[in-house]
Length: 242
Image 1 (tube, rainbow, N blue to C red):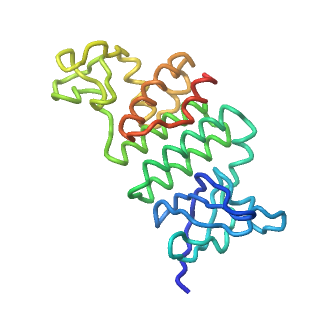
Image 2: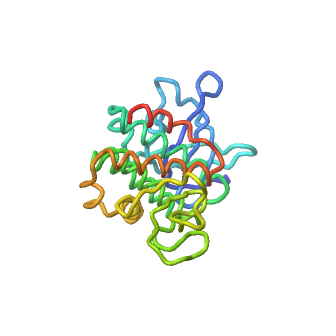
């Protein structure tokens, strides 16, 4: 039979019929996959609980005409329970998987898979502030997709920096001549924080006051949604908690 096996992160699920679900997953080797999981809503299902958002599984798929079919799923990372138990973690994770769904819609790499798995693992363990983990993930995921920010030279004309104006739509920090009217000034400390989030400098990030993290998070959200060309609905819940 035309089947394949791959490691995957469950991004989202939708009900189908009385007992089935459509599951959207980000796999390590096959990119973004939409598949039908038959009977998983029944209490007798052997792997229904493993196909919930934020879970990492080793799954076997049957290649279908329109949608693939999940034949088997073994748990590799049970992050869902710890994430769902904390509202701040849950909203951050929801924004992350929603962005991952969009970023990897056309094409994906194994780097995107490992990046998301690592972020969900850190979130479930409470290693850092949920907001910071989300922003770090978004900056890295966007950079892997070709939208890396500039934190030194002007992103538009290349004038040597650093510059304290920041316009995510133009690619990061910009000089005074290129900055549109009303562009926010974030200063060197703000640029340093964004760079630390991108580089995974957690010693620097963890020492940052929550007020500064929130300011940086707003810039990251605007930057990500502009390049994804779609609003991330989960950001509204992140904003309410903030």
